Image (cartoon, rainbow, N blue to C red; front, side, top):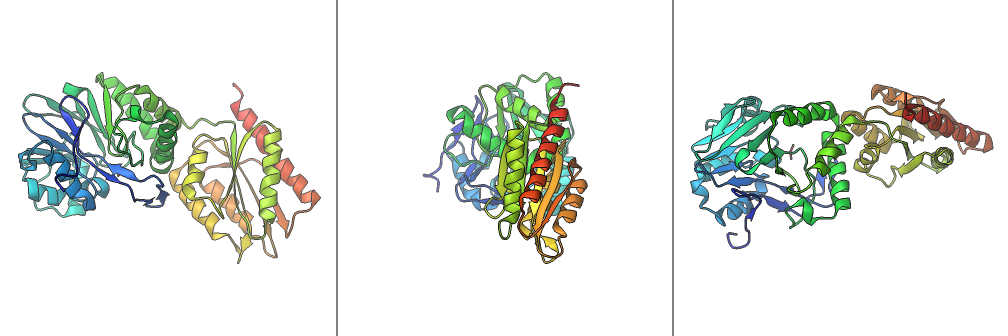
Length: 403
Ligand code: FEO
């Protein structure tokens, strides 16, 4: 193991010592077709410090990368910025191997780590704004509760202008390139947006406050080192500006038409609605849940203004793939969306009422009259679908026009 893996220097005193997971394809419901990395960082200060660890099966890879720089037994401190198990799952085993003199986490982190690891070693709580001397340099901690766990915090190493940002500003992307500037901008944009939509979106109001809080510190940040994906060392505005834009969730001139269909009637309705939207100048994305994963739906909603949902009725319910997506979207709390509902049925037609209730439950404004069709839509029903599309387009135009 030792000969395979190497650390990568990311700043004057910091090495990346994480692990690359080329195989993972699911993060609790979020599909990750391009794998991920679990980033841990080694600070070569007087007090040698490890920032975060990795998912349990990757511990040996991390220790081997550390061993390419120093004997892991020389680590004095370990800091846990966030207690989700992809970053702390092997913490107890690492503590057993390394025997650090101290382990640090936020107060909420100490509690969560206790409930997750049932540790028999002490973890010392650090406060928001507290500094920790590493001898010749120091760390400063900033609580970032609910980005995206209650115990999350950032850690700043002023000596290198380096912000350890745990999950924030990360992406699920397995690469050997360790720096964002070594990767194409469109890849970074897509992967960061997908990550934001599937992980960070519900905490957008907290993100805006955290961006302000970091700005108010006056920290001279030159590098951002997240817990997944590449390290940002050039053009930090690329990711900071996108986080601000995604967190604000301003409506965009885009409608996402999501449907689940049995015999293509609901699909015909989706296409009629989309045609009318497009003719009215709205950018449209049609997503068939017979083929598309829930992660793609929330990604498309990240910069949208309308969500239009349709389902056939099956056994007095919406189709199960639609129920899945509605549950997923509700949890991720997209904001400022106009909505509408459509669907075909054979004899009972409950899906549209359930979809209306689901949209209202997620605070999507239903702005058009629902279109419900028995069996296959004819010309009259398709005209109603066109009308639904035009109504949503008109509502979007109102929302986008300057007040
Ligand atoms: Fe990457 Fe919230 O763990």
